[in-house]
Each structure stands twice: as structure tokens, then as C-alpha cells.
Length: 526
Image (cartoon, rainbow, N blue to C red; front, side):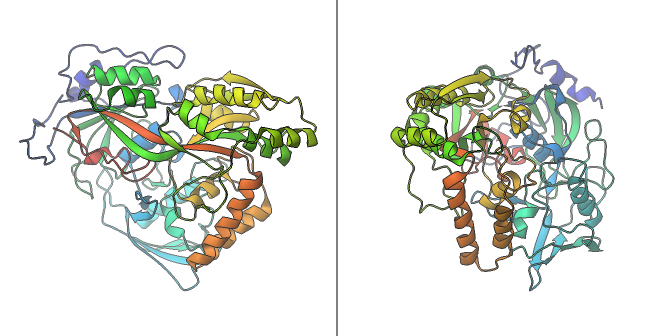
């Protein structure tokens, strides 16, 4: 697709070069405030949203293999692009509760095994209404056994063969088992609704989201235009460009130089250097990013739970938070979702105990253990955390060889390969973390935690109508993960975003992965 109105934007675009390192080249001239086209976005100073302008937002990306297929969204850049083009039936609010989006309402029967979902009136970018058939097509596509779409495990409770459209905008979802938290399924990461029979996502993607497709260059940028007919109100911006800039320093320099207006994921040191100085704005989404080391439990040496426990005890969590995150976060306790609903906050805070760690390694016959720790500069603090943990492990007699991998392929590389790696996650409900990462058939099961009795407990929790009873089952599951799981969760980092001073409307209390994170339809240029 080509549009002369955007030819200047392409000329002023970004060029990615080198082996994953993004080199920014600003060709031509710009005015530095993102006001490239459309209405004059300057407001009258009364703080009301202004209309018009172009916003350029930089994210770390996935290289030339990137796609606009929303069901393959895996990285934060993928999610931001998908959110611009598409909608889900529900999404997670700041408190990680499911909020209606394309679904106007949902209602279970008495058994919790059938749910009636009624769609709001919304249209796709080509003018077609969003219907029950589109929803069922999207979910059946995600559930394709031959594919590994991100939301596949989350949609597992649905019997999609039995589910049906009972009206143009009404779906009866038949579940395989009673599921009390079915709205979380509707809000699952990657569960976007696409038009029935859609297949061409990279050349002519059609969604129902706030922005329409203009152009896409994998590993470089995606350009979108305001959807004036958006059901939730047209965006304030005329145009949005999401650019791939893998180097954090390059994102910062582009922001300072006026080449972009929004820089996703800045380092704590960067935030400290610029916060309150007036040149750019720093937004901190407190404690929203889980930081961990991921141990693969299906292979040596971590197939021995004594070795996993030893590694839990090797970690000095405060040192990791102070060193890798520059103090911009809080310590973890080897469990996901600190502060979220159902979090097992009654378990004792684990502390470093090198003597006990050495004893456990001796029992396991691993006194002179050598392991490779895969890391990458793909995320802030990863290489620093790897170095700190290497030094901590040496005190317990463990040799850790830090291996720095490619930023472009890291997440794919570490999913099935290696034994120990750096890992992180944005916010999601604890039950979603379990369903996507800790069940036998979870598509992003990076620890290879595969236990049928654990799967059964998850199903029991989902079938428990009483909230207190459900919480008790989740606590039982977390106690097991605390004792012998594969996630060494050492901290929860602030999520840090930088913006130009002219950028307004960025939500400050929306953890990554939630509805109002990277929600550019509500942002404007003052």
C-alpha cells in the first residue's frame, strides 16, 4: 500500500543496520515535536486533548522475521502493533481484572460451563461489522493444533467445536470444564479478533482497532492512520509510527534529538539521569516487570530439584535489584505476580544461604557444577544480572559461563534450548501466567515444567466458584513452585518509558501488557 501523504514520513523514517544493533538515520528535516501532518496539535493550554500530528514510538523488535499476524504477537513491539490494529473481547485493567472491550457483556450459566458473550456494535476497517462468526474463526485459528499461537493454551478450556453463534453478535461458549475466571480467557495475551477467513496479515491487515494499516517493513517500522470510525472514539493522533530500535542508548538519543516522541523500556540509569531535568518526561510503571532466571526442569542439571533449590539459595536478590536494576524495583520470592490477586504473600521471603546451597549441591553430586547462563542485551538489566549471579554462584562453588546471545532471536532461542537463561515478563493475572507458562501443553513453557497433577490443580482452581476456595488452590500450586519450580524470580522492576514533553495522555498506572499500556489512541501531542 502506498500513499503520497506518507512519503515524507518514510523519508524521515528509521534505518536498522548491523547485526541487531539499530542505527538511526534521520533523513530530511523535521520539527522535532512530531507535528508532521494533519491538524495543528497545539492546544490552548487548558490541558484538553488536542487533535492531529504524528507520534513516533520506538520499541525493541524481533528483526526481519516480524509479522503483523496478531496471533503470533510475542514481544512488546508485536503487542503494540497488534493493539493499534486489532481488539480483543476483553483486556486487563491496571488491577489485572478483565475489562470488556469488543464484548459488551458476559454471563455464565449455573454450572460455569457455558458462557454467553454479547458483542458491542463495532466495525472492521473495511466497514464490515464484527460478528460472532469472526470471533469463532479467530479463536479456532488460534487453537489450530498444527500451530503454536501465543494464546493457544489460554483458550484451551473452550470446546470450540461445540461453541456456536446464537445471533449475529452473540456467542455461546461451551467449556470443557467449569471455569470461574473465563473473562481472563477472553483477555488473554494474543487473543485478538480478526475478520473471518483472514490470512494476509502483513500486506493488507484489517482489524477493528483504533488505527488503520498504512505500511509495514519488518524489523524497521509500521505506519498506521487514525480510524475515525473506532467504536471507542477516534484517536487524537492523525498518524502513528512504531519503529524498531533495539539499542536502548539509540532510543534515548533519538528521543533527546527529537527523532521520536516515545521510547519504550529505558534503563534505570537513564531514568535517573533525566528525571526531573525538563528535557524529556520519565514515566515509571512501578513493579510491573518480573525479573528471573529460568531453569529447565526437564534436563540436567536442573532435573534434580535439589539443584534448583540450591540456585534459589545462591541468589542475593537485593544485590540483583540494586546492581541490575539500579534499585528501580523490589525483590522477588520465586513467585510471579507480587501484589496481584491470589499471590501467595504468606510464604517466607527467601534469602541467600550459601552453606545450605553447597550442601544441596553435594547431595545432588554437583559440587563442582558448571552451567551456561544464556543472556542478551535484549532487555534492560539482563547482562548485568547475569554477571552479578555468576559472581554469586562462584561463592557456592558453581561456575557460571555467561553466554550473550542475539537480541533479534533471543526469545526464540531460549524457549527450547539451553538449561539456564535470563527471563522477564510483563503483567498478567497469575492464572494466565500459569496457563501460558506452567502447564504441560503451554506454548511458552520456558522452564519445561510439565506435571499432570499440577495441570489438574489448575483445572480444579478454574472450576471452583467460591473465590476463597479458588485462592486456596492457587496457594497450594504456588507453594509447590516456591519449593521446586524452575523460575528463580529475583525481582520486579519498574517499567520505564520516556516521552517528549509534548506527549500527553500516557497512562502512568498501567503495567506492561495491560489495556492502557502502549495505548496510543488516548495519547496526544500538546
